[in-house]
Length: 277
Image (tube, one colour):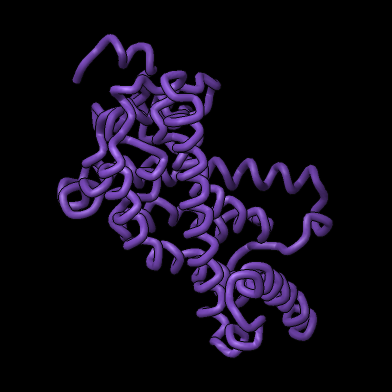
């Protein structure tokens, strides 16, 4: 039994080695010889750090180029385009936090490799129906956790004063940009991502799906800070999230509006345009 368990857990080790190889062999000079001598957690952290930076900067620059230059005045009026100074400040804040952000997925991978979570390595182990069911439960738990974590970062005054206020210096359309998506105090950003990890101990979760969702956060947060109301129900799009940045008391949700609807903090973008707080 112990041998079988060790062999099963080794699948996670092989998978993280594969992820490390894809990123580090491509980005570091001299092939894989150098980084493979690092301790395993440091290998994963380095991969997460390099991959996270590339994803954040690439998605941010491409999205800003599209909405502010290629489609200039189509999605965002000229007088509402954030200044280069505001966007550079957001990049600076995110870059300072990025080394710390990357500690969380590194820790989750370590715990998965040790067998401390309910993760499984292959969809074939459970089948597609069970995979979809588990993922739905996982996403509900994550949504619930992020909603309450975000709400408490506002309601508990010391948490807001010393952590979350860093993100809320961007509170108008002409200061919000896709780069604001990761512009947090490092501990604030980690706390809001922790539900992704806590859920691993509650519901069986596909390892690759967990990793992909953590990295998709960089794209998702860029999207909800671009001030463009996509109007895709029940998605918590930028129209809703821009209201959050102006009222501070509504639309705490992450992917959808359901938690705000359930707990009475939802404000619709059309309603928000008619009211001031």
